[in-house]
Amino acid sequence: MMKVGLIGLGTMGTGMAQRLAQARLLSGVWNRTQSKAVALAAELGVAICPNPAALARDCDLIVICISADADVLEVLEAMREGLDQGKIIVDTSTIGVDTVLQAAERAADRGAWFIDAPVSGGKEGAHAGTLVMMVGGDGVAIDRAMPALVAMARKVVRMGGCGQGQAAKAVNQVMCAGINQAVCEGLAFGQALGLDMDAAIGVLSGGAAGNWFLEHRGTTMLQGSFEPGFKCALHYKDLTICRRMLDEIGVALPVVEMTLKHYQRLLDQGHGEEDISALYRLKQAMFAGGNKRSL
Image (tube, rainbow, N blue to C red):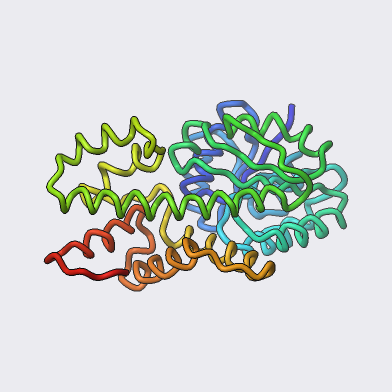
């Protein structure tokens, strides 16, 4: 049976590790903060690897779930001595296409495959195994990795070669920005009109404006609860990647520019670790005192 290792035990990585363990695929874990690895390894009955190279040496497939481009390349370099012919690296992070191509080249130097497999679905999806995964890479490698991919996601879609998974994720993140803007703004408007907001969310969720974000975050944002499913700071990082990709084709998208501006304001106010629905803070403030002003 395939032996899978996982690097990166944040909210998403922990959920993925649990799903892999349930599928009897998970063999070992590694995390920069060792205390997280100790607790989860004990819970799941898997090994704590002393370093990324040891994990790569012991496993057939290595899942990476970390935040930034530089971190992915750093972890890949740390795995280097443990990589050899036929090993598969599945990166579920959100990074730039240019970084994917660089990582794939480094993996190939060791005879290994690199698959970019960013996901959508938040912490709920990671823990329930209902993520949607956008996959780019060699077809043979994806076929071999499929048991691990389907253990983590309810839908795995092949987008093309290396980097195409991240291209699809960039589109997803732009759409998420627009949905966040619309839902937060619309609910702040409804509250200012004196609507029964529970009733409003119920009826709106069932109509043409219905969406996952409204159903799962509408009530909590109205309650002033912004426990992270997807952090503002991470979406800000993702949108900077989208902006970089857009710069390469000479286009600026208003929803990207506006959302980056608003997230920067939230980060400056100390809300970067909150859920992206914290954008509601800014929308609600627009209606305070009836002042006609924009963000």
